[in-house]
Image 1 (cartoon, rainbow, N blue to C red):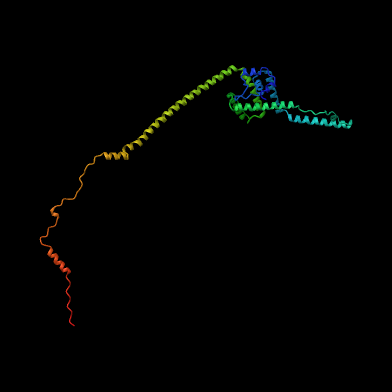
Image 2 (image 1 turned 90 degrees about the vertical axis):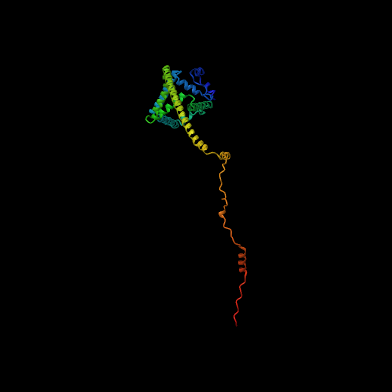
Length: 309
């Protein structure tokens, strides 16, 4: 549907104009554009100044008319005048001629919208909705950075102006900028392009300076961090390795003990037996005395004499 739409509106050399003026025929994902893209581009680029000026004047006139003219009241007034005139003519005809004039002038078949016209209108409406939807997505996903920045600036400015200006003034300013902005650019293209190039070079130079400063600061910070890390690592190495060097492991202690020669130390022994330590030997014979003592112990006591009766 989108591919066959450009053939419905006669445009002379649309493909050539789009290719030469930089208007793409497809989106970045490869989706074909609607015929409203070429129409809007042709109007805003002032390829046909008379058509563009007429469309601008029409839009401005509609905005001013919607603000200052009571269009809704006029529409309702036209409606009730038409219906009142019809009713008066019908009643007068029936009263005078015995038949209604409006009812007799009724057509044999009421007018209807042809199916082809309905399909054409619906197709154009679909194309118009697709145009706004595609353009919003192209701006949102930054298919063209300039358009995204311009839309951002317009939205931000409108956000602040809507507090002080009515909607019709805001709409008038937006339409004027949209139509006269490209004309001003085309009239001063060389000067504007030169200023844009100067601005881009200035931005690029400042960006390079900021990048170099950031790299210098990063390298300096990296060097400082490496220095402190080296110091802390050396201190940690000293704290961990030095006690291990002073306190040997059990295996090393055992090897040290086995390798150390054992020195024989004098051990205290029993004292030498000397002659004065023994008692003096008896000079008399002990056996006869022992025998006498034994006899005395084993001797029975003598019976006591019985007293005389």
